[in-house]
Image (cartoon, rainbow, N blue to C red; front, side, top):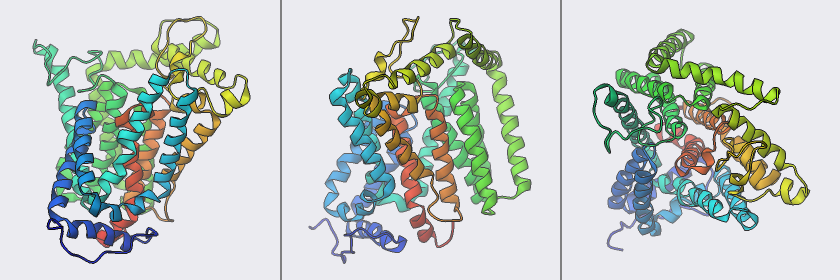
Length: 442
């Protein structure tokens, strides 16, 4: 007990729902264990900086944060009770639980366990780990933006290495495709979804904190550059739609003027055009590939195209989701991890997942799992009250971006990408508390 200060214990059960009482729980942990609180914010920032980089640094920093949180649990258990009963967290927990149970009837239990581990060892613990220091959200977001910027600089290095006739190294590893540098990870989609989120955050920073306008536009430029050159078409679409939504919400609550919207739009278009010039030929090829693939499928032809194969995976996996028996395949699914065994007709090619989260979850976890997944997303997208604050507008836009990307990839299989969704859900839930702490709507 010598490590802790003797402070009054706030009411924690049933968990309070008003922002003032929730804030008092956060303050309690800080006052009760000030030394541990300082270490906690350092470890939390380290994790937030590592999350956009790669699996290894994210996993190591997560482990350190988990160990520290367990050591501080005598103090933290009171603080985290509001998170455990929040609708967003309960929805994530129920979806993860159903997905995990489906491993019992999965045709690939090994893959199912691998996917389940990304839920239970990264995404689900994250809200509980960050909650005790959520009042220092600016530090957490700043660390996240720093991690994304580091990834952007690695991308730039990957582009420059061949031009300078240098050999790739650990700091600048050779990308899976030299035409699509994606940083420290080989998956362009899993890299650039973090950049898309960072770009929207930088936009809000430029509006809300004028003294950081130059820094925010540098960060925004790097993020847009990274999104363009990595050429993940799903992220392009998700970023475009969610950025438009964010700007609409900010205009609606009078955070930003129409005139400024015009300048922002022009700047983003110019940034995208300049960035695309570095990989223009490859971008043109990837865009032209889309209508060619759809035309080939419509006419029953087979072509060698990544887009063609991906569409075939979607179609085949969706059709096999509705094969009889109804209860086994349609209602409860084939089991987590089983989509890797789907084979496209007339093709020997396969993948560990069909590159569409909704189709994959329908096949693996049935209509029950898909309904729970959609319910989880809708809770995070739903405004908590009429006029969205900047906090909520940002959380909603980020959730839309994540969801749109999920239509073209399997981000829920990745611990880092699913943890990104957990982070978005946390900030959506905590936005009223952050407004109370800062004493204003924003």
